[in-house]
Amino acid sequence: MGNQGPSASTPIRMTFQAPPTLLQLAGQSLVRNEALAISTLQNLPIVLFPPLLKESYTQRRKKIIKVLVKYWPYPCLPVGLLMSNPNVEIYQAMLDGVDTWL
Image (cartoon, rainbow, N blue to C red; front, side, top):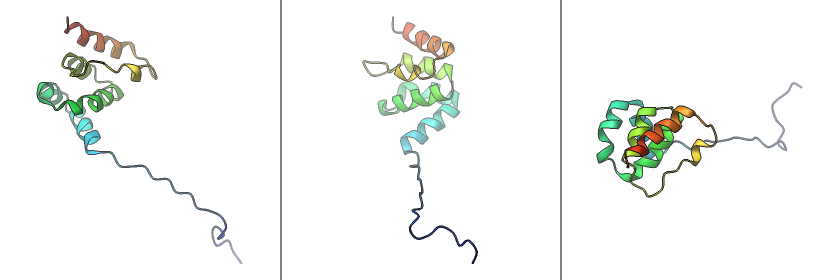
């Protein structure tokens, strides 16, 4: 007989990736529309800031990062995500945002 697929004793491995959350989708949408993101940052709920910073970093959106840092509502700025893939231009955008604090 021919090959009829895996035997009953061979486990089939399936991997599932969780769909993005609404928060992640909102961040991705804002980062794609840079002008909208920048114009609405002052009025965004603070819960959107961390995922928006991460998405801006992933997509290398320096202008958004600079303005995000300017309006950052938390006492600490998470720059640890920059350590995995350092980028001088992104560091500079963050520093430019920090300069507005002074």
